[in-house]
Amino acid sequence: MRLPIDTSAVSFVSAGAPSPSLEYGTKAPRTDENGQLLYEVELFALGGGARDRIKVRVVGEPKGLGDFTPVKVTGLQAVTWTQGERTGVSFRAQKVEAAARASGAS
Image (tube, rainbow, N blue to C red):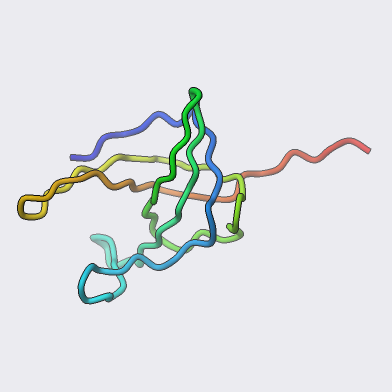
């Protein structure tokens, strides 16, 4: 099941550069249903007095991300999964991009 997440009250900062998403076991590059490469971005999510580190999958390699880069996350979803007796939640987004920085007045 895919559950949309309202990110309007959450700020995100990257925890490093994106990396290719790899299949468990084979280490083959993971693709979406259209054959496009998936990447993983680790993010710090901050909001409502809480903070957490999450890993988000996104189609295509997000550019310009490094340690502590403020980012904008579009279309974030929590995706539930079951594998045998194991269950969990992963995160998927339509887009993760470096946030535009406001320029200061001189």
